[in-house]
Length: 243
Image 1 (cartoon, rainbow, N blue to C red):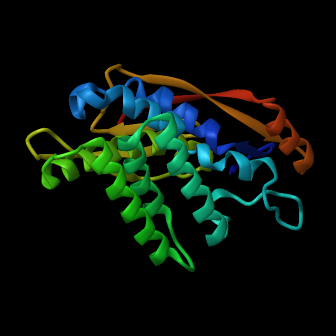
Image 2: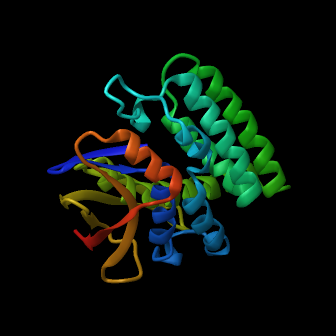
C-alpha cells in the first residue's frame, strides 16, 4: 500500500496498480537510452515489478486506527517474503533477466533485521537468473546490461511512486549509455500529480498517464480496503514534463 495525504483525507494506491502505471510510463522511454533488444522485456518488468505485494495487500497489517501500513512500514520478515515472491513471479511473467533486475530493486529496498542475509540470498538468486538469461556472456558485459536495465526500472518506478507517496524529490537516476558514459535524470514534484524531469528521457514532449487509486474519506479504511479488493478504483491523471 502507498498512502498520500491530500486535502480530503488520503489517497491509497495498491502496489501492483502503481507498477501497472510504471509500465505505462515505460512505453514512452527512449529506446536509445537503454538496451533496445530488451525494451519490451523492461516495459513488462516495470508493469509487474510489484506483483509480489498482491497477497499481502488482500489483508494488510494495520495501525490501531485501521490505516494499513505504508509500504515503508512493513516489517522485515513480511518485506522479505513479499520480495522473494515478487522475484519468482517476475521470473515466470517476464523471464530470468527481469527477475535478476528485480533482485537489485529488492536489495535496494531491504532494511532492518535480517537484511544482510536476505541480501546474500538475492545475490545468489541473481547469479542463477543471469546464468540462465545470459549464458556465456562476459561478466563485465553482463553487469553493464544489468545496471542499465535497473536504471530503466528505477526511472519508471520513481515516476509513479513519487506522486503516489507525495515525495517532492529531487530523486536522481543515473543512466549508462552504450559507450559507458553517464547521464543523470532528476525528478522533482512541481505540484500534486505532476513531475518535472531534467535530462528528459522520453520520446514525447510530455507524458500523460493515469494511476488507479482509492480515495479514503472520513477514515473509512475498511471501505477503502474493500474497494481495493473489488478493484473499485478511480483514475488519477499524472503529468510528466521536461524540467
